[in-house]
Image 1 (cartoon, rainbow, N blue to C red):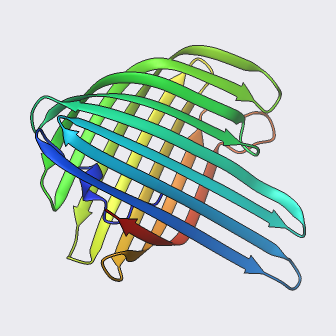
Image 2 (tube, one colour):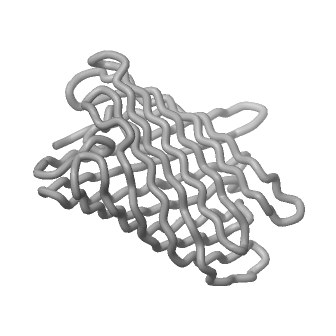
Length: 229
C-alpha cells in the first residue's frame, strides 16, 4: 500500500543516503438499493543511511453496507536492514495486523534473517529474504497463542517507462496456528513528480480459517498516491 514507483525501497546498497515517503487514499460510495462506503489509507517512509535502512509502513481499511460495518482492519510494519554489499544483507522486521473480519483478529510477528538482492538496478529490482522469530495470534473465537514462526518474503520492482512501474510483494508467514500467504500486485502511473495513481490487487490466503470463514480474500482498489522526499 502506498507504493508508488518506490524503487528506493527495493534497490539499495552500501553507502547510499536517501529518503522517500508516500501517502495514499481510496474512497468509494454508492446509494440506492444498497448504501455502501469503503475507505482505505496507507503510508510508507523509507530512510537509507549508509549501510543501514529503515522503513515504516501503515495501512487502514473500513467499509460498511446499509449502515452495518463489514470491514475494519489496520496494519503497521517496521523493517530494518544492514547491507554488507550490493547483494547480501540482513534484516529485522516487526509487524502487527488487526482485522475484525478475519480468522486471526490479531496477528503480530517479530523476527530476523538474511536477504539477497537477485537483481539490483534502478529499473528492475528483485530481492528475497527469509527469517525466523516469534508470532502472536488471537483468533476471533478468543483463543490466543505465541509460537515460533518463520517468514519468507519477495519484493519485485519493474519500471516499464518513466511514468509507469509495477510492484509485486509476497509474504509467507507460518507458525503452528496457520500459514498466511499474502500477495500485493500494483500498477503505478505517475501524474506528475508528486502525484500518481495506483491500481492494486491483493490476495490473502489462510491455510486454516475458522469454521464459517473463507480461506481467501481478494481486494481490488484504485488509489491516489502522494510522494515526497
